[in-house]
Picture 1 (spheres, helix red, strand yellow):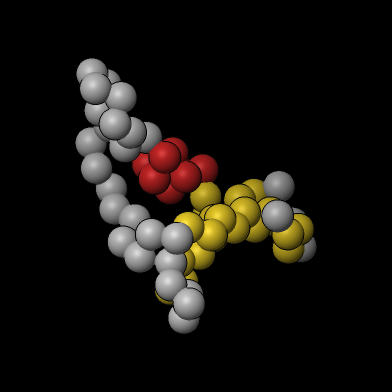
Picture 2 (spheres, rainbow, N blue to C red):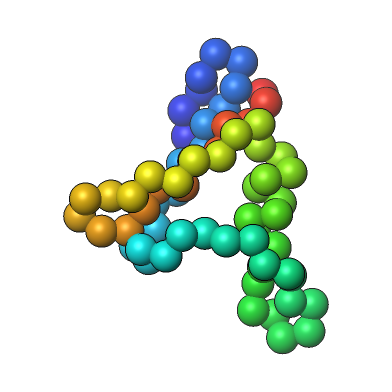
Amino acid sequence: MNTVSVNIEVTVHEHSPRTPRMRTPDLNDGTGGFGRPMVNRLAQATAVTREAAGGKTVSALLAR
């Protein structure tokens, strides 16, 4: 986690090469779908960076 001026940048590395996508949250089977919508509502900006060694880094800029 980095503090950037008046914002906080949260960065997560993930080994999966798949691009994050919005999907309908699964209320019955517990297979997820809640994370991306929640991050998009809270964040001022988001970014996905593909890593040369594989996987990706997902970043979100949040108001402090």
